[in-house]
Image 1 (tube, helix red, strand yellow):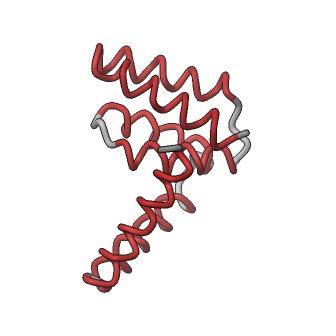
Image 2 (cartoon, helix red, strand yellow):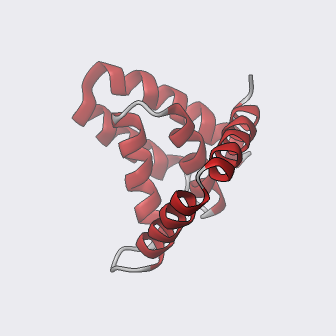
Length: 111
């Protein structure tokens, strides 16, 4: 399955969940909007953090969503690679495996 297919499946699953728990989904969406639009860090930096955390907690669907966001925000492969290196340093071998997935995903979604 391609990363784009994985991203589409993740979105489909989230729409299904959102329909089942609309109040929670709206509240979570408002939290995300508030966090991404407020504060002193810019949006791209916050997405770099989210990608690193996605690797650390081993959340493949999160990796796809944040890789796409970074590709759309104009992140470079070198910038993403720096984030991956930091995630590996913090998470060891398991993070190395998910960092490899994240780089594949970013490469596909930014092409």
